[in-house]
Image: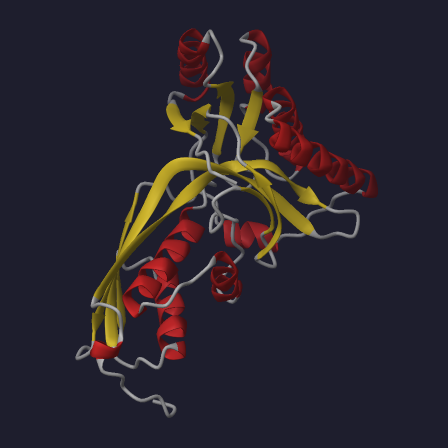
Length: 301
């Protein structure tokens, strides 16, 4: 076992740990800096993955259910090895986040797994530690932070905490299929120098808009980012969604830049919220035959 000593489970905090992590509805903004560094800005939503981790000292290996969540096993092995534990364990993932849609389901699985294992070991694991653990596994969203964040998803590193937004609703459609975000992030992004400068300006403007709770500007930037992303990952419904947002006087269009979902953004404080939400749902049903409502998460930042 490479010198690792089987540690008695009594030294750890408990036999079972449970934790969770939210998803993000695509990105408020995704692009690259003038120096070529990629970034995204998260849009936290009330959609969750919960993980239950159980230490099994007398069982060899780490098992995960469902079995295709194998990346959680890699994470568990790394954490348990660092803790000096050489026994087995069981990971059970319960996720309400659809996979392959651009809602950060994979990152949420891993963050929730790290937190559940940390609860079991009795060792705190903060966002920076989670970044380090995920860095060797896959590109990741910034959902380990309880905030809207600017995040370097390729390097798995925080760019900055932007803050929190007032309550928002995303009425979404799914264009179908699934996207392998790891493969997508490995593709070269042929941004022009002009586009990189625009992305940098949009990030500065978005940071100010989040700080000021300027939802109109947030929606405008999200729509522009979705438009710029059309040459990388086309949304066939984007043009009609943007027209619907303008016609209904909504905040704008929000998309998963490397996913299959797109949505119409509505402020919960809008005096015409109910009628606008109903109209947005009808628009999504007409465009894609489906409509799902997501709600943003707010935080004390």
